[in-house]
Image 1 (tube, rainbow, N blue to C red):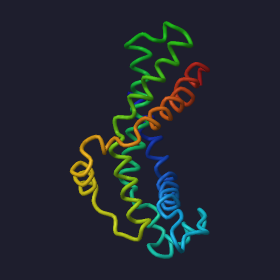
Image 2: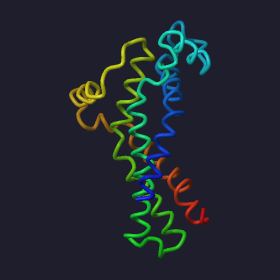
Image 3: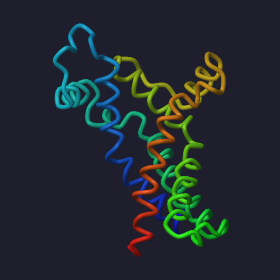
Length: 177
């Protein structure tokens, strides 16, 4: 339960920082090469969004970001702990600990649809459109691309989740931190 609670609190805190960062990153990618956006930087994008939508504009997609980060870190911590203790992987020393982190990282990818929807919300705002409700994007993606569309980008996300979990969940445990 401690792993679940700690991951949830850490994920919510991370979302406060990551939502504006994700908005700026998404805007830079969506508008890359478009006329009028050639000289965009993180600072010019932030200024433009604040000018057009206020500071709250940087936090479009905040709900899905918060939900994804909280469920992400709590899942990583929880699945790693389950692998470590219930599956008894800790008995295999450092390789068992790393294996636990791999399982925790892969297990945390169940929430990829939330991230896919967050990116679509921020894409729309970056393109000057209004953001739609969560359910709108879910339905649209599912109708146009099927369930697989909600899991777009899961392979690189899984690789990232594995190394992050091993280094931020497993290594501190091995070091007794």
